[in-house]
Length: 313
Image (cartoon, rainbow, N blue to C red; front, side, top):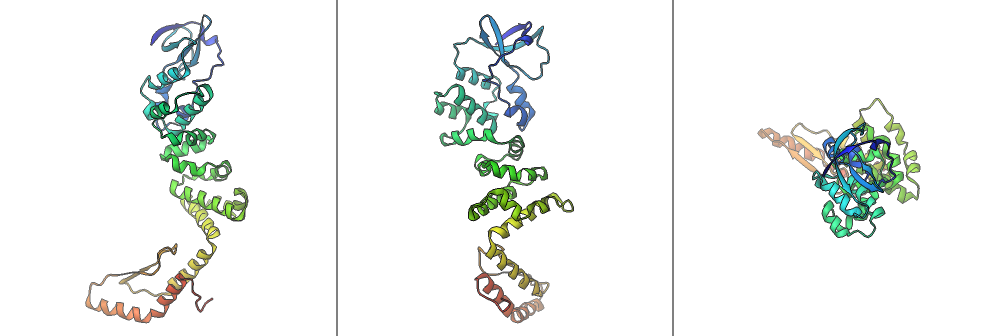
């Protein structure tokens, strides 16, 4: 670390962008991390002139300003300088996956023979994650911001690796969907496109999802759920039909106040879930009488769950 008097350095323009990565600066979960990363400039010798490679954003005028700098000669390896920069304020362990992606891309470009095992340890990633994390560079700014804010792990971020999918779902981000529902929408949409050999946009338009998206009379969460429900019906047509029939039968049942009746809406678990709160002796008779009266309707529900035809079909 050296104290350098910066004289006319603002007039020197460098094409050296090797250390100029900005993912953390713009999209870090806290501003502090970005400020630390750019708080120490790197100066590279070119002839007899010190050329700024990384300069802190808070300085508007470098003339007659004394700042700390990391100064290297041209024969210093790129890896050594990059690691020094990351270690300067101990920020390496605070990098998000998009910061790491940017660093990996720089290493691939400027140090293709770097020791990946060593850098995996430095960056805190698994050996098999190098390529996946590098691909995150292609994600748009809005998506990076969303994933960082939601603290989404790499495996789930990769669900959105298709550019066409991100482009189609981008209008949902201002509605602040939870990652669970957004991932469900992404998976359903991709499965429909694969099944029908269509592209993402065609499937989206066929389901008329813009109608739900732009329905300003509904809160954001309800619009998101409406989109997921519509995609679910499109993806699982037969199950959705059985669900509709099942709901009709459930609505016809007149439940006494002491009884609650539920079924698995996804048909993954067969049968009925019956809960009864019996606080008085007469409640036992109420339950028994209701079971006897409703026996035929309950059997119909079980038939629907098993895919059997009912009288209404």
